[in-house]
Amino acid sequence: MATKRPFAPSEADLSRCVHCGLCLQHCPTYTETGLEAESPRGRLYLIKAITEERIEATPGALAHLDLCLQCRNCEAVCPSGVPFGRIMESARAGVLAGGRAPLAWRLRALFLRQVIARPGRMTALAALLRLYRASGLRALAERLPYLGERLLLAPTVSGRPFRGRGVLAQPRGTPRGRVALLTGCIMPHAFGRVHEATVRVLARNGFEVVAPPGQGCCGALHAHAGDRATAQALARRNVDAFLEGGLDAVVVNSAGCGSTMKEYGELLADDSEYAEKAERLAGLVRDVSELLAALPLEAPSGRVEATVTYQDACHLAHAQRIKDAPRAILAAVPGLRLMEMEQADRCCGSAGVYSLAHRDMSLALLDGKMRDVATTGAELIAAANPGCMAQLEAGLRRHRMRGRVVHVVELLDLAYRQAGEAYRQTERGGS
Image (cartoon, rainbow, N blue to C red):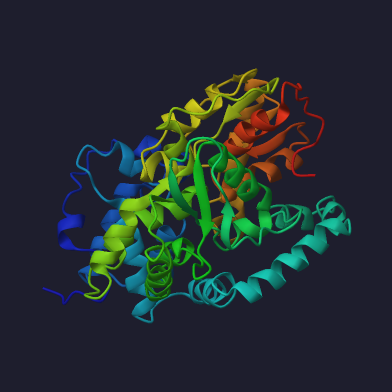
C-alpha cells in the first residue's frame, strides 16, 4: 500500500462514496459538460487513484480537479455524508506540497500568499482596481471585442474602504452581548459599505461590536487552492486575535470566510498548541444572518418598497447549511417582496478566484444564473458573500440588466435608516 503523503485525503473519507450518482445533477460542472470526470463521483475516482499511486498526477487528470468549483452542493445532498470539500482541499494540498502541481496552480498559490494575505499589498491592488473603475477604463475595456469578456469578471472596487479597528459601535437599547466582526482581506476594499451596514445593524440589535486589530485574512482562498500551510498560519493568527476578547460571537458577513472559520478545528487538528483553541473559536463563529435570525429582531420602522430575489451563497447554503436565516431577514423588512429564482442554490460561477482561472465555465454558469434572475422581475439581487456579489454585478453589466446587487444585511440596515421613507431603485448594477 502506498504511503500517505502529507495533506492527502484519508482512506476513511474516500471510502464513504458508494457511487450512487445522486450528486451528479447537483454538480454545476457536470450539468454543463455531461462528463463523468467533471462530476463529484468521477473526481473522487481520480483522487483515490492518484492518492494510491495507481495513476500519475498528470496535467490532464489535475485539470478535472481544478475545474471543480468546491461549491459543496454534492456534499449537501450526499446520502453517505461524503466530506467532498475536505477531500478536494486535501487532494489539492497533496499535489501542491508534493511538487507536482502545474505552473498555474503554483502561480495562483503564490498570488494568494503574497498579495491577498498581505494587507499592504492588498490595499495597493485595491487602489489600482478603484482607479481602473473610476477612470472609465473598465467601462471602455468591457466594450471592446475579445478583451471585454476577459476583463468582465475582475472584481469591482468602489466606495471608501472599511478601516475600522477596536471598538466599532456600542449597543443601542438593551445590551445583548459583545461580538467581533471579521473584516477579512477583500471585503473591506470591495464592499466596505457592507461592513458599515453590519456594524449598524448589530448595534441596533443590542451588540457591542469590536474588530480585533490582530486579525487578518481567514485563509479560505488558500485552503481551497491547496496552500494548506498558509491557510493554517492565517488561522493561527485569527485564533490568537479573536480569543483574546471575551466575545459572545465572531460575526462574519462573507459566507466563504465563515465556512472556513467554522472548520478551523479541522484545519488545525494536528497542531497540539492550537487544536483546542481552534475548536473554541470555530464554535463562536456565526454568519450575520444566522445570528440575527436567532434573535427577537428589533423591528424596522422604515419600508423598502422593492422586489428582491435571493442568491444562496454556496458556502452558506451547502457548507454551513444555512438557507432559512437570510430569507427570514429579508421577510423582516417591511415593503420588501421576495421572488425566489429557480435553482437559487446553484453556484453563480464566482467561487473565489475561480472566475479568473476558469473564465469560460464561470461565464456559462453566470449566464444561466442571470436567466433565472430575469424571470423573477426583481430589481434587487440579495446575496451573502462578496464573491457572489461581484459575480452578479458582472452579470448585470454583461446582460445589460437594470438592477442592483446588495448584501442581505444592507436591506435590513436600509429599513432601519429609512424612517418610513420609501426606497426606489435607480442604479444600474455594479456601475
